[in-house]
Image 1: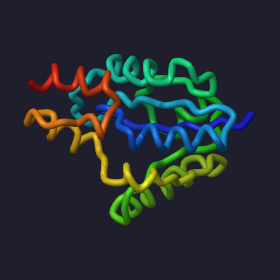
Image 2: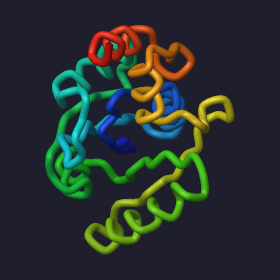
Image 3: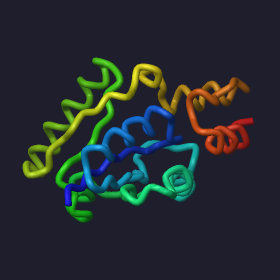
Length: 157
């Protein structure tokens, strides 16, 4: 079974993340969404972020959502993943992601990193942008699923 991990803080999960996940499940038998505990300061707790993602993918048996607080390569090993999925939106993302990939390759050369781009309509979306718009009472329905938008509004207004 080919298993990959797609990790991040997902604070909150956006349509861009969901698009990358939908692409990954076409390639892999199982995609584990790894919800990082940190080190970033997050609006949502790790438990809340896991629940939001589980609610979105509750009907998809190819997706599992697990929280972690270790190095990503250690987490990948612990779940038996042979690949790490990373989303790339722009050239600026690539510079940062290349550094991470090279370090992960040094730590665990047997784990491959796969870069996936979201569809064009989601390429500009980020969790930070969604939070900023929501905090100013803007409409985020085109950035995040309705359940996420609702909880985001409650947290920020």
